[in-house]
Image 1: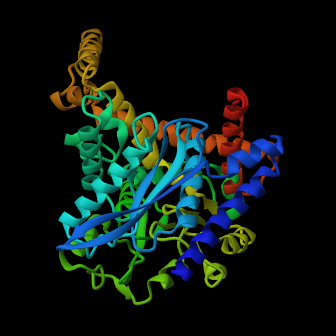
Image 2: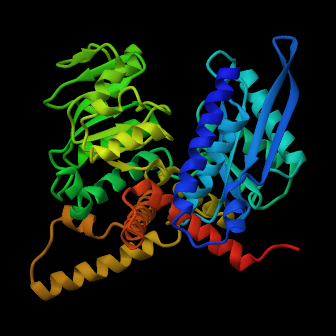
Length: 474
């Protein structure tokens, strides 16, 4: 356990160093900066659960990093490696991530020490509900207080259990479903949530590829996704959707790395087919027309335009950073590049699109889900048909004026109203574009050489404005 704690402590120290580096550019008072940096509250619990006729004591934790805006927001991870410093680091990152993309939440994170792979569904449900009940007892969860979400080892199933537990203990509360996000659509979830983080990664990469000023240092010309060669690490939710959207826009996926190894084909790999193949066989190795890469980390060092690490922390480190050949590293995962590695990469003129910005698509769409739960109506329900009627009148006017008729297919495309997934994706795209240009403007104004420092500073300044406007109570 000591090694795990050591890793968590290193992670927290790394986040604090990034914060300190960005804070040097800020004119906020030292007291406000100190308040922005620290975690506001840490709640640790131990509770008994009956497993196979025996009583087991389960450890849980919930960290609320910042209360400058409420509710606080952050995932719950189920893992035997959960420790306090790691959860603090993740909660801290959540605060800055929300601020970067203008999501009005403070940051939080939770964890439960349990192995979701070896535990039965019955045990997982008991642990999830008891953990939720412990948080509810202390008023540490709720649509206006703290709103959890899925993370490593949890998913929509666990979020539905939490929502049901909250509703049972807060019977009759109108906004009860807003106590958690990442729920199944039938239980108050939102369409477009599953692909949100990966789609956000795609939008961020697309903006960077159009930024000639940024690309100049990496010896790249501004352009589109067309023909860009991409290697992705991790074929989970983030890696799969990020690479799929990039591929749909003309990118060539040349390599995919997973825990069992990697596959490589310079002519391109069909991501959707690989995903199905791995689901059926349990491995992506021996996929048609691909070369197997035995050591999955070797794939990260191969030639490509864009490398998307979308798996675990610390994958690019002091040991391999000097051998990375990608021109852009797009951080789909949290903390895939260590601080020491980042210094080497930046010296080699490799552009890093930081996790703080790039994988914020998940929390952005979680915010949309929370809004949906508070309004108690599906997005698009009231306006879709009115939009379509308006578009039909416009099409009829064009046909009447021009004397030419459109085909039924053309009319269907032009008169389609926006449903929930269209609105969610539109909101996510707008958020990622605006956040990108805010970060770039900060880089220019403060003469900051890298995007991570600029993203941290952008977040710090926004949070500082909140604290100064609120004042200090009492």
